[in-house]
Amino acid sequence: LHTPKAVIVIFGATGDLANRKLYPSLYRLYRNGKLSENFAVIGVARRPLTNEDFRNNIKKSIADFNDEHINPDEFASHFHYNPFDVQDLTHYQKLNAFMDELDEKYDAGGNRLFYLAMAPNFFGTIAANLKSEGVTNNQGWTRLVIEKPFGHNYDTAQQLNDQIRHAFSEDQIYRIDHYLGKEMIQNIEIVRFANALFEPLWNNQYIANIQITSSETLGVEERGSYYDKSGALRDMVQNHILQMVSLLAMEPPAKLTPDDIRYEKIKVLRSLRPISEADVNNYFVRGQYDRGEIDGEPMNAYREGNGVDPESNTETFVAGKFMIDNFRWAGVPFYIRTGKRMAKKATEIVVQFKDLPINLYAGKGDTIDPNLLVIRVQPEDGITLHLNAKKGDYDTTSTPITMHYDKSAVENEYTPEAYETLLNDCLNGDSTNFVHSDEVALSWKYIDIISKAWTDKKAAFPNYTSGSNGPREADKLLENDGFYWWTIQ
Ligand code: BG6
Image 1 (tube, rainbow, N blue to C red):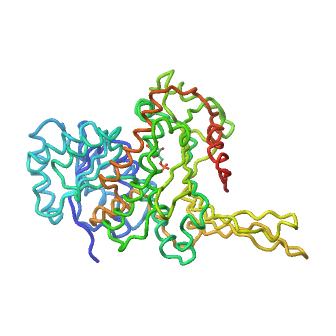
Image 2 (image 1 turned 30 degrees about the vertical axis):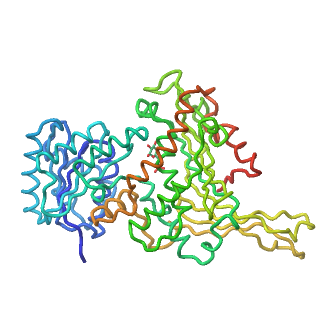
Image 3 (image 1 turned 90 degrees about the vertical axis):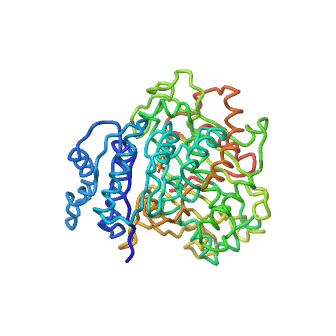
């Protein structure tokens, strides 16, 4: 079997993302035979660590796995630490030489992967220096992985893109949206395009609306100073939520190539009904959490958090309605909501089918619920189909029933972590589940109008209790159209 070979440089090697996600993901790939011995990792960060310290960090981050077939020291021996000043050109020259040395030692095929797992302020500097010092002039393939945020708005996203494009071409750039690595998000495509039952109905003739909820119970915790400048719209809607909308709404691609799929997603973003600043409040609702209680624990208000302005106008909740003005979706609202400090941690997609022309069972006092297809992204991953069937009685009456698929309950079913899947894709040169610069640009253009309207006009915050489902206006958004949020599970 062909496994990828590479020397991987991780900028931000002592950070939270690297320790919590990247090292464990590399370990799982190694354990599952997706990564052979032909790889080395160079951890790059400011603080002075020895190789031994660094390898101890790696071992700590994989300590939970306890796999007796793998010797943690052997795995950790692939990791090398390199204290680094991103402004100092000589450091890039040394890095270049070190990469060559490791390439030879691990027979890594001359391939280089640069992973920027750090705050984006230095992305431009790093890209420019990697190029000017010849670090990207390697023999094999060259790839760059970057983490969000991809800018703060359309203009800054374009600037960031220009800086990075100076050193890397679009097809070398892998922009991470970790939602695209989630198993059930990847399943949207399969459920739609591999089932005769759904695809013929997947349009405005049969679907009444689609609802996406991504709720969290955590507040902003220690990220107040980042979050207060970002807010839920930039933190979740611009990226994860719009990605889900694109996957749900796109046309079947001609082939399953990255280009074909990304092209169809881009078409969705281009078909979003543009809204004007004056219209924003008819389509979007913002919220900010107040004090409250979750699982019996008292919670403080957002404005009381660390690093947060006590009069902050930043939203921690967004609900909204996207209209997609094309043949397939004209008239079908895509409702979305996401927020911190809500009643539970869950991401779910509900596809609500239209009502039948008449209800034959209504005379018997029964209401027929609409059919729902529920894609449960997390915490448990699975699919539930809501149907109607006969009630257990002597009459012919109808009652709602459900059919469940619980992925984790299926024996021997392995569910990879989002980062594990994405790292594997990147190492194998598959950019399907990464974000193209056109997607970044189009989504910011849409989001910028909402943020402008919301910055210009202060909200009456706080407006929802911690542990609730957001402000009342989020319910009204659907009620105005004759719908309501399906709360499931
Ligand atoms: C991140 C956001 O992109 O996604 C966080 O910055 C958020 O604020 C997180 O908590 C949610 O991810 P998940 O995988 O826990 O749903």
